[in-house]
Amino acid sequence: MVVMSGIRKPVIVGLGGTTKADSSTEKALRLVLSNAERLGAATCLIGGPFLARLPLFDPEHRERTSEQLELVETIRHADGIIIGTPAYHGGMSGLIKNAIDLLEDLRDDRRPYLDSRAVGVIVTAFGWQGGGATLGSVRTIVHSLRGWPSPLAVTLNTAESLFDANGNCTDGKAVAQLAVLTGQVVEFAKRFSASS
Image 1 (tube, rainbow, N blue to C red):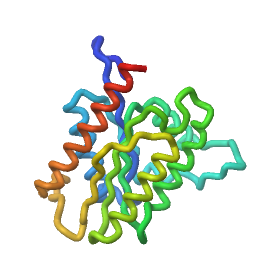
Image 2: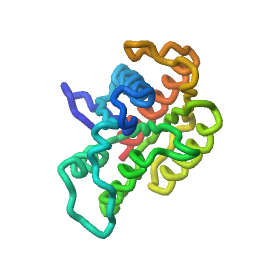
Image 3: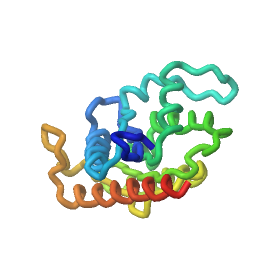
Image 4: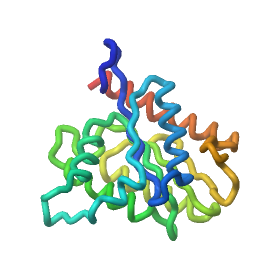
């Protein structure tokens, strides 16, 4: 939790995107983080261009780059996480999976892996077929890392026009679903942090 002016704020981290800056996935994450700020959270985005600089995770070598250390430290202090990934061939992107694999460094923490953290999931796909399979696999990974997936996860069909040139979501249904997802992650983060 971040303490600002005597008020404790949950920290919500958006993790995801693609190597393309300002991808649909990253636009969705930015919208959710903006929603979280309106609900009283402090936020941080770890986007695709940053993730692209991470070397491949190698469990046999403990040396870490400054970017790897920054990622692990940011997640370590998060109260909630929202993972945004494109669906690539029915699964999450290697970019996002590599970052998640690095969370092995949290294994021996007081809150190991994603324990005691709400985790929202957003999947973008060019068509509906890949979204469901990818969503299921991401939620399985969150469970295996002891995270608490939010009841609602969101799949977005990027074959349809969802964002305008300024990054605003133009699809009312998507806006509503992303708002519910945000509310669930922030509410869980506030309640769990208050009780621990």
